[in-house]
Image 1 (cartoon, helix red, strand yellow):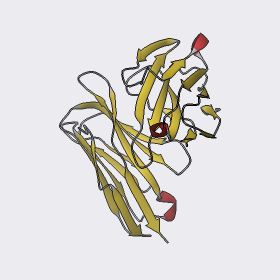
Image 2 (cartoon, chains in turn cyan, orange; image 1 turned 90 degrees about the vertical axis):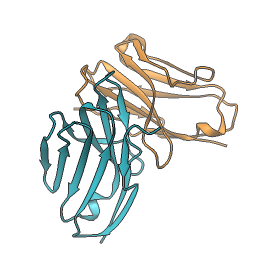
Image 3 (cartoon, helix red, strand yellow; image 1 turned 180 degrees about the vertical axis):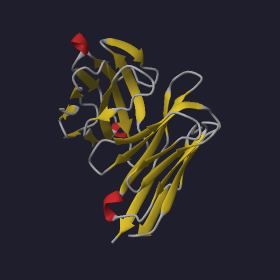
Length: 111
Length: 114
């Protein structure tokens, strides 16, 4: 059973379009992290969200933590080919402080 | 700041052979993790160390996998004997102590078992 569901699993869009990636669970998280992984490299931390309802912006990327701390979203505005990669969310469970990983969203931005 | 160093980057071995991976974490990071990542999937935790003690090794296949972190710094992960299904990328990560600190990952070792 996947405790953190990421959707979509795969997304291929044209440069300049907007997109949103989702990370959902029935469990409550004390914090949630988003990573981007490029082929042949390890994941790189983009952001950590801690407070329910929190919104963080990183240039064209907007991260939101759900009010109930069970879900999160990543919105990319005007996507660029450099945004291509595997986007992973990982949540620290409120109940036992375990870090749970989603399976990732593979994003391809075509020039 | 230097990142997490891992070696080797690539390894090809035959099944039933043994292999070892090495990791040097970021200086000052007390927590070190070994993850297995199969192509197209998220990382799966194998073992977590805090300093030189094991915090979580519940998903480590102990009949064939072993790991150590002597002196609380470098770590090695060994597989003996390897199976075909062990083909994956083995990632090392380190972090400060605390549940809300993000992890810094190394570039990983891509293992192919033939």
